[in-house]
Image (tube, rainbow, N blue to C red; front, side, top):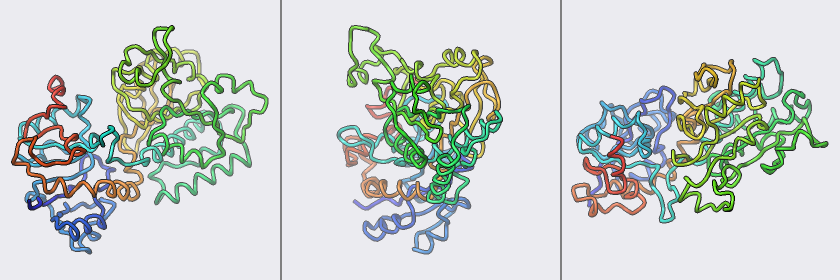
Length: 436
C-alpha cells in the first residue's frame, strides 16, 4: 500500500515547547529510504529551524491540510483538529485526566484516530517511545536551582545557589560542566551546618529517576540505603562535603495493611488496595525529594496534604523542595496542585492555608512541577526521541485506516497505542467512556 503523507506539526500549546518529533536527519532518511512524503509545518521557535529542513529538501508549509497523518509532541489545541485525520502525540488522556477530556471528546466527534506514544509498548509492556532520561536530567537541574533559591531566601549561603535551570544553559554539556563546578565548590568549601546532612531522596528507579541521578552524581555523592537516613544525623562520620543520595523502591514506600503478610512486588501492582504508604517516616530526614514514579489513584500517595499539614505546622522542617518530575496534579504528591512552565517552574504549597504561592517564599515545601521538562533541553531531547520514533513511522504511514480496527495492519506495539480509531474508543480504552 502507498504511504500517507506525514505532517510534522508545530508545537503551539506551550510557549516554551521547542521540541520536534522528527529531526531533519531522520526525516530525510524516511524520505530517502522509505519514500515517505514528509511536510513540516513552519515554526518560528522550533529548536530545528525551518531552514534546516528546507536545506535537505523537506517541504515546509504553513498548514498540513494535505497530510492524513499528523505527528506532534504535546496536546493539540481543540480548534486545530480536522475530520478523520490520524493524530500521533502525547495526549495525556489514559487516566481520564479531566482537563483533556474535551480534547478526547472532540477527536471522537470528528471521527479521528489517536495514537498515543505513552502506550506504544512491546510484548512485555515496556514503553518503546519516550524521551529517555531527559525529563529527569532537566528536572534535577530545576529542583536544585529551586533548592538554592529557597536557601538564599532563608539567608543560608551555599554553592547550590550557583545551579541554574536547565533552560539557562546552551546545551546539556554546558549544564553538566556547570554542575561539576558546583560539586568542586562543595568539596572545597563544604555545606553549612544548617543543611548538613544534605539528603536527596529519589522515589522510583526508572528512566526519570536515572536521568535525575545522573545529574546529581556530578556532585560529590554518597549513596545510602533508605533505612540509613533514619539515623544519619547521629553518625560520627557525617560529612558536610558530601550530598547523601537515597533511592526508594516500592518495598521502601509501602507495606501490606495486613501485618502478617510480607511485601510482594507483583501483588502490590495487582492489588494495591491491600497496601498503605509508609513513606511519611522518611520525610523529616530528606532535604530534597525527587518524584519519578508512575502513579494512579489506586496506589497510595507519597505525600498527602494532611501529612504536609502535620509536618509544616511544627515549624520549618528539613524538607525544602519537592521536584515532582512525574507531575501528576494532586497525585503521588498531593501538594502538587498545579503544573508549571519553565519560565516560572516553582511555587510554595502552604499546607495550612491549602494554597500555592508562586516562587520560593512561604510556609511550606517548594514544588517544582514543570510538565514539559525535556523542552528545557530541546535539541538533545528531540534527537533522542526522533531516533526511537523513526522506526515506527513507516508502519503508521502505510497502514490502511479505511479498514476496521482489526484489519488496519498496524504492528502490535502501535496498535496497543490506538486510543481512538475512526471516532470510536478501541476495546482497551473503553473505560474512558465514564470520564467523558
